[in-house]
Length: 201
Length: 196
Image (cartoon, rainbow over all chains, first blue to last red; front, side, top):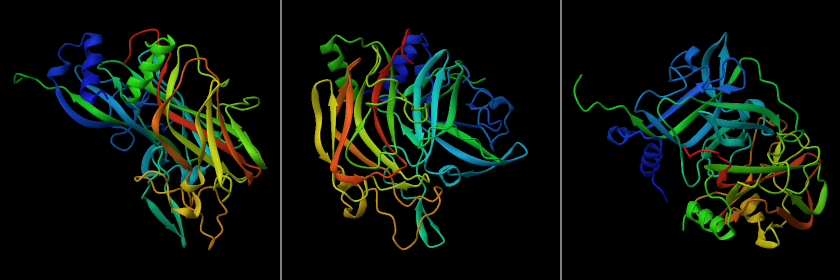
């Protein structure tokens, strides 16, 4: 199996990024919340508060920074007047029969296509340990993560990325409305490349 | 052999293109109101389903697309949208047919849910059984998990080959909500340029 570092160097070489191999390898995650309930994540990050709603200034990395996405997840956040507050599990508010169907776009290319996130819990997230006692009933907090199989996906430096998503009811097929004072968030997690100057500035 | 190597090997044997965008695919298909039946066929009927019930239009991948099935995921919802045990507690088997070949044959799924507590692999707990002590009345309280079986072998769905997932039982009760099947794994989607 190709390692995360090998994949980053392979893509960097293909894109002609000759100095990426000299940068600092790290672990990182970027996140954003769709405060506007527009069905798009990361595109509007520049207008969102940090760190309540996002940890990026724009939906692209600066020179010689990159992220190899190895897992991603959706979550719900309670909001009020455009301000983000608590991070919560969206199954507990939208119900188990909700499904998010999303695309991840990097540059002009769709790299994750019509991918579902089941509110009831995703594949590979079976052994959940986050249990919650709700008035005498033990209920699960299902996990809404997608783990990349085989190889991660690289967001190269200075290339825009975003996620577009829609909410559905998987039983009826109907489009689900957004809940008032709630907003969906998403994080992308994986091996990070950070800018590293070889000489002091 | 890794999933990436296996997909490349099979695609090259079949003469299929290998230049697509590497990604993770999760294919899913819903059957509405299946009722009590001895047989379910997923990825066969797409008529009337929305994008929230399936992410395919036909029972085959596009000409430049292929994937490895690594995990089978099954869920059943009652008419209130509450997740319930797939097929109740009845023993069921799953078969996956790709082209004219059965590639998973009569694999029992019931050990991965309900009261047996014996999922096939060592890492997963089973999907569990709802407490009989309290009645769950809202779909926002989930007491069980969907059924999942992670395959030990990487099975390839090549481009433009029909596939199907069949569940067989002795009259299992799937109720009047919906049942959902998802196949997840490494895949390739069409790409005109180089891979990220």
